[in-house]
Amino acid sequence: MDQREMYSEMNQLLGAIAKALGIEAEQAARALERGEIDVAMKEDARGERFLDISYAGRKAQVYQGAILRG
Image (cartoon, rainbow, N blue to C red; front, side, top):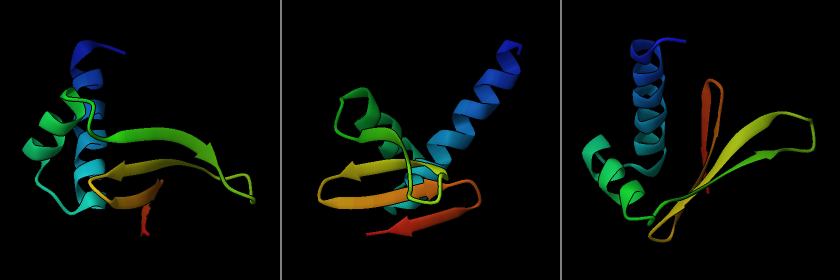
């Protein structure tokens, strides 16, 4: 993977986190840099992997192609 591909994938991940939390990508980037957003890779009962995200009382699970807010 070259640097452009990695940068593109990081932007997609940041965009998904921002969308899941209902915030702008810039706000998500700053919050991640400050360690305010918790992100954990998990697996559900069906064996599907997802990102478990929490920030300022907001929670979301990001699956490939789906966002669940909790």
